[in-house]
Length: 288
Image (cartoon, rainbow, N blue to C red; front, top):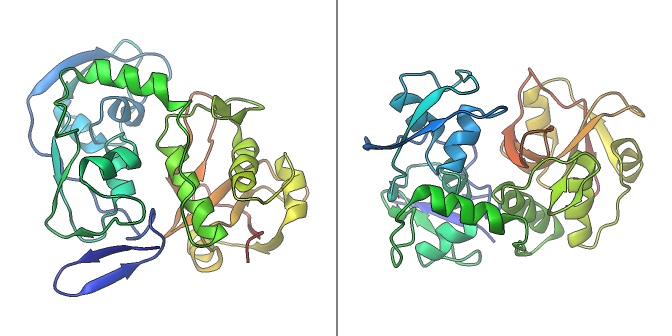
């Protein structure tokens, strides 16, 4: 199961939900400011952008900030209107386009008459980022509806192999707004090892509950750098932080230098990028 992104010739991309590799920077069109919001405790540009279905770049630009700028509690931010469409560029995938705009992959697929099994996108295509049959009247209202539904929505088990199914589920859960919860092991909230155990269980693989005991379920390979991780890990592998027998964090590698994790209190299950600043210590392989 693959996305095929075509220009003059077809380019096959690995795994339906993470094909395309490194994310292409999303350039948001200039839009009118639709709303002013007050920053709440613990919020970031990223979380506010996701909540209002705009890119971090668009939100930062509207407020004359850098994309990595920190915001303060009670700070007023101008939120631009969410874009109605997006023009596909080289390297794009539906899942990453959805993620950048705080949308669910399955919604973007549906709005564009695509599906997980038939999801070809082409350079230059205009993808709908809103339901063309039901114009969105109020972004705040839609955000509330999405938040109310996110934790009861069931992800689709799609893929020809267990590794593909693991990646598919991980990306879907990263788009559902599931919060970090210490000891959490359900769609109401996950901690890092609760998420990995839950996803593996969905594809029929039983692994232990906590990070240290999950080490016992895998064949491990130490990694020394972010590039080492990318060269070593395969989609569906586990990434561990910490020393052997004392790991403190775990995530699911989805390919192309990206992983899905339940990061920390105040954050949601999310797609992140491997970096030397926060580098896994070793890779664990369950699926062969």
